[in-house]
Image (tube, rainbow, N blue to C red):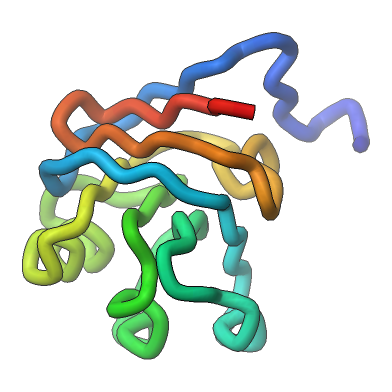
Length: 117
């Protein structure tokens, strides 16, 4: 890890913007490009810098969405609301802080992601 990368340093909760209501627990799957879509499994928590229309291929499989960028009118927020899944946006460094396989709880009511393991 380089000195410029974000670190958790004992933090067990990340705060962002509540973009779609609900609470879901699952394993993190960091997606940095469409090449990662094949790794996403049913019930995963999708973590990305942002989403765009190409992500529709996987958004129907995940139990929640977490992004680094966006607001309540972002693609991730709108699609998550349509699908009825929790979404938290605006967590700077989420794709570096959250690692594949981590067990997390996404609280779309409060805009929080809790690290459970």
